[in-house]
Amino acid sequence: MPHQTSPVREQLRSAGLRITAPRIAVLDWLADHPHTTADQVAVGVRAVLGSVSTQAVYDVLGACAGASLVRRIEPAGHPARFETRTGDNHHHLVCRGCGRTEDVDCVHGAAPCLEPSSTAGFEVDEAEVVFWGFCPNCSQTRHYEEATA
Image 1 (cartoon, rainbow, N blue to C red):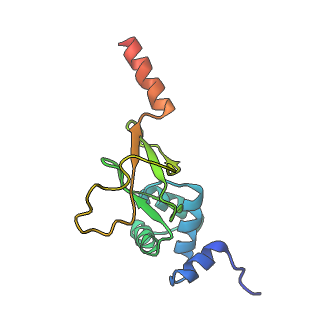
Image 2: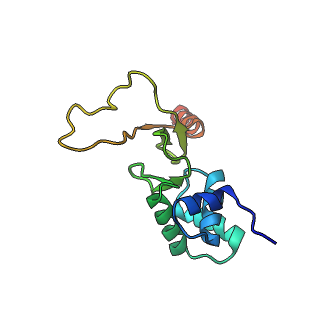
Image 3: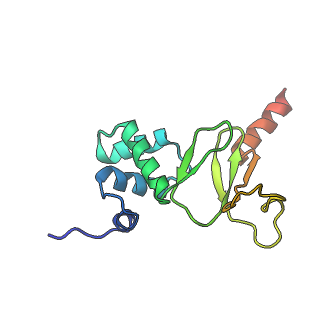
């Protein structure tokens, strides 16, 4: 019986990466759970494959990030998070309370501060914007705590 060709298998093949069960599981799981930490990915992959080391998950995430199959985002003060949405220069909203992270599509037209006033010789290929604030749940909790204080 021939193996079915899945989008994840084809992505790995096109990126020149070996097709392994941990790589397939990581990419499949991450596609449904964006903005998760490596530890969270490891828990999800273990539910699918059984025993997989956290180091193996870190290795898969590193290889996939290097091949542009996964994007690593590092909001200040929070652990690195990973997503499979790559190549479109989108941005993120990050909650200061719980760390919840959501995608924000790139602003089209005249967007402030997306082009540096000086590149200092750098070849700039990406601008990253992180919007900080409080998600609805944390905002509601904060307002409640302020009202009862």
